[in-house]
Image (tube, rainbow, N blue to C red; front, side, top):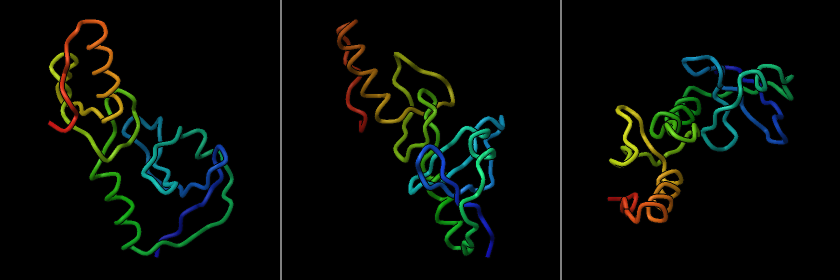
Length: 120
């Protein structure tokens, strides 16, 4: 079993998963959802308690990060991602449902162009 720090960050209980993003600016913090926190906020917060997680629990948590991913537009880790639409295409990036819907309304209102539903 591995030890992890449970911290209170911005009023939420967060498990510090001891992993940073490639640019080290954000860190994996599990608050019931796979989330990314500013590394300074997470590292600079004293542990509330140290907990032990089994290998199975850690794998389950990390699978939540890996089966979804970070949205290339809002930067949030989301489970539902898809390739961006052609009017806002960036090679290699993925877009979440929330950003898709925001873009859809923007393009309908400004260009009269409907990019279609997220699920297509």
